[in-house]
Image (cartoon, rainbow, N blue to C red; front, top):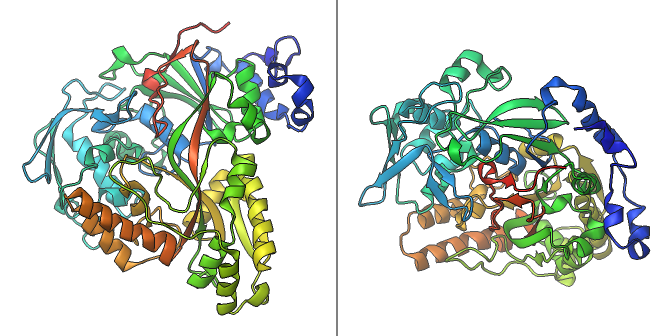
Length: 557
């Protein structure tokens, strides 16, 4: 990346691409993070990055980890899915599961047994064969309580996986995952699970190199070369600068991996992301949060800004282990005091829909039950019943949000005003760096906080099972045995109508009866890239875009 990026002759900021007479007053408000850009320019002197990338993507926050078992964020998952592969992988066009490291599979008549047949030409990027033992090791590692994977619960559909994952047995051989030869893996489920092949494609369950992990321990990703099973290798990772990926020539589908070198830049500021894109430094920007909120209603009209129905929900979590949020009346009151329509009209502006339920309405075979509506009068009555008439005696509390997107702060300010106006209570706003924010959630070191969830697969279960009592993604302290039982019955129910009824009852507990969360709005996706220059990015509700399929068709100038 050239230092000429910062010169007046070569840097074409986004101001010049919009009608200045109409929008100049807005544009003057944007901070330009010269320090960040200077850091990128300095890298041109680093021999590691002297070679220009074929594709540059702004990927969101700095990854928390690249260990498949440990990741939780979407930005991390995109990179992991480029480095590692599961038994299945996501189709670049439809985002549905297709053969990955497994070339095929057989399913038993009762739907509980899967036999995966691995590709005999699947090898690690360092040349060693990928075997059934690697698969068994990878999944047992996710389940091992010592790993502390927040996604381990998604493997509990496997026989005895829950007992092992929760420490009730320390025998990994009891889990229904076993090698059936060097290139075959047998999996036994507790009951038929219609989305199991989707689970196999998730980044957390990608196959990892046992030989490297056992040799290097926790530093296995820091000692090159890192053996990878996916389309790319990890060429370099400079914190707060970029991750460079290089095409894996040993990948079984290397012939259809189009870009040789891909750089992924961390960035949490919309104006910085837009400047990098308009200057030609970045080719693609994922995520609506990397669009300047003041300009979103204008930019969305441009042909290189692409909006779509998105399988995601923005919501608030309560820490129900803390007083006064252990009182359901308080949680309901805070929920009913929020005017969600005002938030989407005033702040988000990209077609988002106010959410009175948690599961987005674009999933097949499911319609959500009604949740709590905007009702300030009832909210005030509930607060009085809880012992806080007019907000008197209600302790000041914190609302936690992360710094990767200006809209989070704008929503926080709006909530602060609504709760003060309608309920007479005071909330302190706490903005944290991304990794600190994630840790605070996981450790329940908060009162209330913003959250979002992007569906991992096209089934309502992907939104509801995160609030199971034993789920690492719960992060509210809420445990409801009835909710757990309803989901367990639903996941074993073959009749779609009865299954929907069970899932609706579970969601009703979540959003109407117990209210450990408050849905605010259903996402509308927004990405920007020039289709006349970039190929391989296909619209889908999960924003699943495998890097192996993406490439430039117009050379960089």
